[in-house]
Structures are given as C-alpha cells and as structure tokens.
Image 1 (cartoon, rainbow, N blue to C red):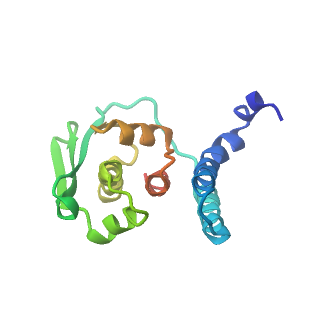
Image 2: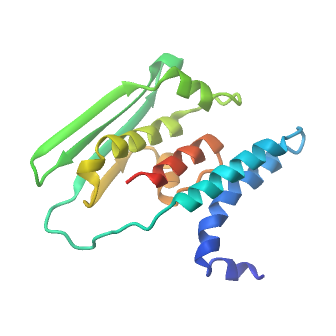
Length: 178
C-alpha cells in the first residue's frame, strides 16, 4: 500500500495514532529488554478505546453563545506544588463555576514512574478531563471555547496524540468524555 493512500481510509486515520506510541516505545527500548505483555496491554487499551469511541453530534448553529472554559496546571514546589484548576463561564445563563486542587500524589507517582521529572503537560491536560467530567451536564450540546495556556498540551489535545505514553493515556480518557 502506498503511503499517500493511508490517509484516505477513515479506519486507518483512527487506528494509526494509536499505533504510533507503541512503535515509539519499542524504538526507545532497543537497548533495553521490553516486555511483550506491556506492548500487548497498550495495544489492548488502544483497541478498546477505538471500539468504545462513538460518533459525536456537533451542532453547527446555535442561538446561545459558546461557553468559555479556562484551564490551567502548575508545577512549582516539587510534588507538593502540582496543582490544576478551571473556570467555566456561561454567558447565556449568566453563571460561572470553578475548581482548583492539588494533583493527587498517586497520579504524580504514576506520571513519574519511568524517571520523568517534567509533568507540566499532564498537569495542563488534567483540568480539561476534570472539567469535562465535572461539568458534563453544562457542556453537553454546547459550543465551548477552551483556553489552554500550554502549547504542548494544546497541540496534544488538538491532535489527540502524544508520543509520551502517560499523556497519550490522558488523551484516550479525554476522547471518551463529552
């Protein structure tokens, strides 16, 4: 199959991004011994995510203005200074909501389990997931303008892909939410 034909098939367009992290992981592990069970587990999760994905109804026209959603993550004082939060503003209903919290230490430990020190991208993506889960009844069926101030996180959310496995798993969760 020619490379330019790959993008024409919708199934390949959906499957290809889930294969990229697996091949990146294998390339990084050349000098190390990698387990087939880990690759199998990742492939199973990717396939499960693909099977669970559902069509989304997107309304192009609406009488009400879009929701404004500002998210932010911060890493300041090591493990105890990783925080995330968001503000949702609904100009149509004239109401707003917010949250802010520390990122749980268990989640930080899972992000850093491979010796990674930089977790800002994950901290910036987490409030997007938390917002979608917390305010799903407000967001469903509405246009939303998302404001994400970290370029790596923004591009990962736009493309729904990251070569960093922990970020990719967050993006898989994001794809399943509203």
